[in-house]
Length: 177
Image 1 (tube, helix red, strand yellow):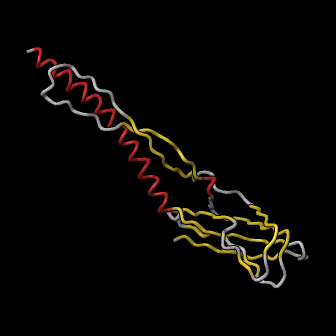
Image 2: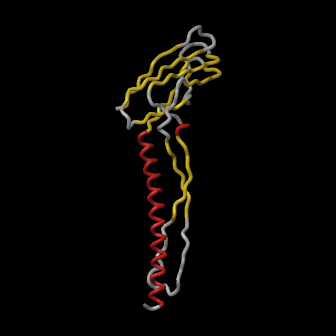
Image 3: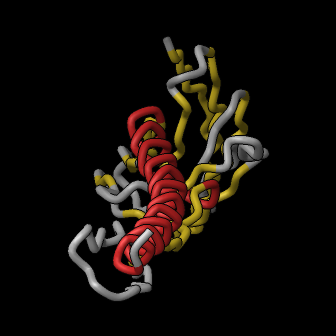
């Protein structure tokens, strides 16, 4: 074998080693992207809003939620940083000397849901006041349900307000089909 042929073989072996590293990195990247996309589609958000339908201002409001079912919130979602290898360059058959090119990397971010630790209840929220005949347009919390799991769930809510002798309470039934 000629020296030129040996150089081409060494270059090709180097490229094939880099290509193998790139493919493993790309598979991991694809797994993260596909899982994140599937989770975005499957996790349905339930924004909970409180409304004051009375004529008096509400003060020192406490909201208690008792959950029966698998509910999640933003704390179950975590952000991660990772790197993936960029595709290596095949120097081809025309290179006359050994060229050991380096692999370059790029960072990417992805989010992951922890579905093994649903929220435990009760959950408590506080508001200092609410105007009469007013609704907060911003939810006091957003709960998430996994739509991949068929289930009947229940949120029992209680609202305590400083001027009311007893809390106002009710149930919110949720069916995931």
